[in-house]
Length: 165
Image (cartoon, rainbow, N blue to C red; front, side):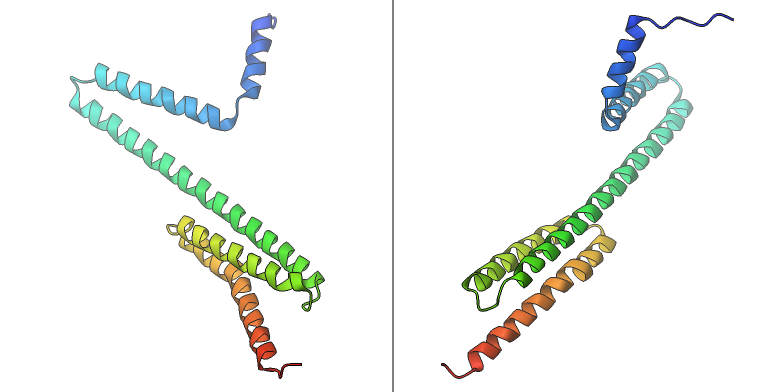
């Protein structure tokens, strides 16, 4: 049995294919499926039963796409939540390295609180259709932020209640 010798075109095609991302391949497949949908409708327009079967297949396809998009968005949100948690922890570590009497401390803390609360507004909006991710955001990220805000408010009140030097 004789096998086909690879040609320059074969290696060029495989190099191009290797460079294409999975997202590009999915987009191309989706484009082809949608073209095929039009062809099937044109070819089977005189067979209502066949069209009905095909439309059910296409509904299943659309539902699968929607589920894939939802899962991808959930994964993305999970990564974003973890990134924010790491960022906040790093900022807290920076803050802990400062002396609370340092003039930079209050300014840095105020900037951090503002940044964290802006992130909270954005992430609550992003997580609105993903209750599990919203719960994780509230517990893991904003729970820490709220504890820090409360501790800072308590320290500020305690400082204000001391007699002036």
